[in-house]
Length: 285
Image 1 (cartoon, rainbow, N blue to C red):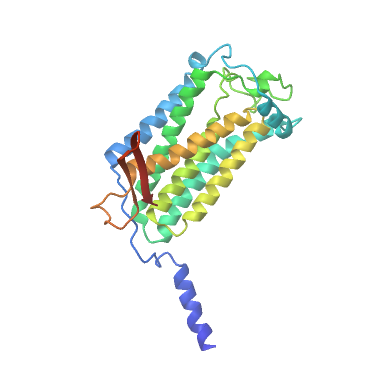
Image 2 (cartoon, rainbow, N blue to C red):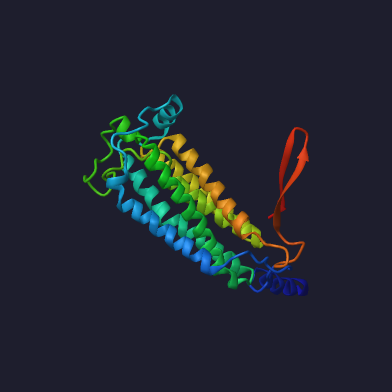
């Protein structure tokens, strides 16, 4: 009984935010006067490009064909009779659930380890990476001009522009490649997970698991809603994930002299090799 009485308080202390990891959280390279404006201006530029869609969106489509893979996946996953519900759910995911979960869990992970002073920088870095990914997505959409599946297959179950809240936006029929929803959700997942891992937060696996699950759901709903092909979603997932990892690692990774020689970090090295020069990347996160 005495053993249980001692073990219970110890267990509760271990679960408290004051019981931080043994080693301090690594300091990431972060400058508010640079990173915050990038996030704000990048977000504003994306909003402006959405508002200017009428003048920027291609008409007619530049990429109008559908390949066999995309067609077969669409036929298997599209919601027959009411694809607009899947579309609405994907919007809720990307506009509310995914960002609140990614940013909220990242902040919670810092608080749980007693590192609340990291929260502001962490959230700006995650936002910055997501905004960069969305900017690349938006530029590509306007250049490529791929016809959306509902337009290509003339899906009668999809509301036309102006026919209700679930209908496509005007001038949106030829902006299929690549999926902005998949790009945003996978960028949020990768950036928040990468930042949590670089900081060494104990809750980092939960941040990764939550983000990837929501991103995968969002990608599925875009196909189910007949708004994107499989290759649109796959490309968005790859680019969003890559940007979400590389922005924190390349521009915010801990440097020697900031958090010590044995903390998380990376390096890029060049060395002579037979027939040319070899490059390598090494590090721990």
